[in-house]
Amino acid sequence: MDFVKPTAEDQVVMLGDYVDRGPDSKGVIDYLIRWPWDANLITLKGNHELIMEEANNSPEHYLYWCNVGGADTLASYGGKLSQVPEAHWDFISQCEPYYETSDQIYVHGGVDYQMPIAEQNEEEMLWRRFPDAKKHSSGKYVVCGHTIQRAGIPVDVGHTVCIDTAACRDGWLTCLEAATKSYWQTNQTGKKRDGYVRTTNFSSVPGS
Image 1 (cartoon, rainbow, N blue to C red):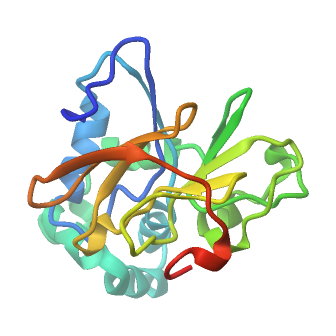
Image 2 (cartoon, rainbow, N blue to C red):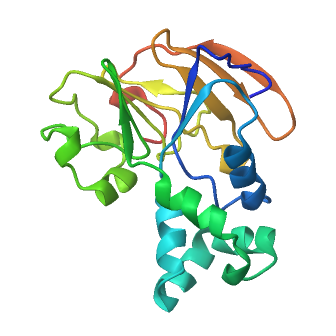
């Protein structure tokens, strides 16, 4: 965010997966709750927030969650689910499954291209994969995450762009301005870079 420096005129849409596979999930949610920027913040839910909620209600889901990054999240809270503050559960429950503008649809995983957004299964939207993407019936540009792009560059296939660039696996964390297709990235060593997303096709997307 220090690299991007959003202003009061900007709207920042976070695509989810604030927890798991990182050393300070608690700190991430604290940051979003205390949001220090003048820009308007919209937080979407990722599949890992969904898994965490399910883990809180089911021993079976708890074991699964621990195996997919939940152990790191627990450590950041002190080791127990009971140590997760109520404000953090409230934050997760209030995250939306998608955000729609006049030109774009923002979602963690993806959308069913045939169905109106408001009628779609919210859980499926968190788990859909980028290679399954097709142009949505609304004609709107879809911005998603969830499916790692191992080359470390956002991939745009014309109707959909994926900005998951493997931050959880020593890759890059990406911010995209959808209207201009400009992006900013940083990694865990503090390196920064920016660029412009160019349209490609799935046959030439590494790892998709």
